[in-house]
Length: 384
Image (cartoon, rainbow, N blue to C red; front, side):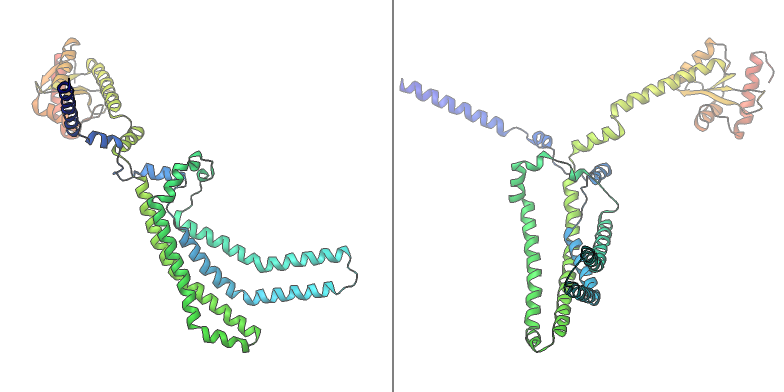
């Protein structure tokens, strides 16, 4: 009994080994191909579809850095106007509240004055912000507007996709970018504080105006220095975003094949359509053979049917032509309909190679064609 149990276990173990050998011997390339590795560069259509959906490479850090620098310069240039407007507003407020009895009309005038002064201060700033943002955005992505990113998408609430953003490769890249920005934003203020410490401590003996001017200049210089470094960082970020977008848009070979079918059509269907068109063209061509005046042959390989209309005064026209099997068909139809068949090897080859269907022959072939037509008309008892 025990020997039988051992024997069954040994047989089962051997069978498992055979199954393992079988699976190890399998070629897994088919499974890899079916997985669809995205190794192909994105097509123009895929890039255009991505742009329509708003998937355009751009660097928000570059936008922020340029905006920050220009706005700082603009605000620094507008400081005298800002100080003047704020001073006027306070002066009007003091005069207004010094009135013992204020009518509703006085309050309304005071309210409009405040709105006017705030508009005078902040209006140009808002205008510059809008112009700068639009200019930088257009310089990066062009005139492209899409509502696709604003539409609700359930996949955005997928916890699996959320975890991928937190622990995936892209999360590490974003973390590295944040660390670089923190280093930049921390280094320059520290450097300025160390270099300007003595000058800043001496401000306690200066007037408020001089102190404000000095601090304003320090802040402008600090922001411009940080902004220039952040612009360089933003340019690298823009190159990375373009590379990443291209990688995300890459396609598998199967996707390229499917897209080609959608744009160009299925190759098998196109081949059938071409075959049908050729059959229709040959059918129309064969229908013109009985009306031809002569069929010029090679005699075995080529056959060209000519039609000459004396009333029109034009040159003879090739109404049908073919080689091998089609040439035999043209000759058979010509025989059935009494169209003269004349052998002229050089002329047959020249007509077949040089003249398209339903096209007049060239002047170089007039002489040889006239000779053949004269023979054909003589056979049919007609004058040329």
